[in-house]
Image (tube, rainbow, N blue to C red; front, side, top):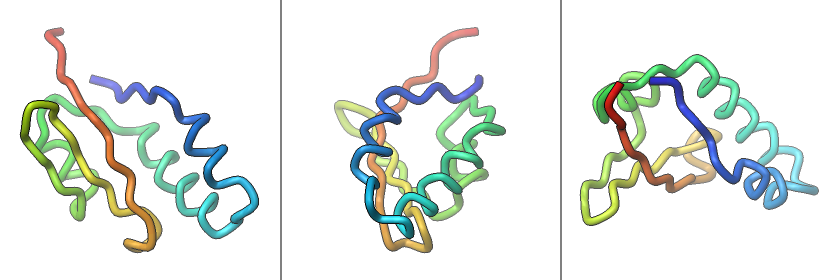
Length: 80
């Protein structure tokens, strides 16, 4: 399943004025364009340093820019 990103504009807004941060998140975003995930383990295959957190709301923590930044995201896998 292709990755759908909601509220990416919020990330861009947060990075505004910080070129290093924007470059790190842009590189992260570029890798997502080719992601095709069916299970949480597929996330780990794409981003080995990601931490999968299973709780009431499934979350994944991405280390961005060589672990200089973190992005916490919710995820949901739907039926085909």
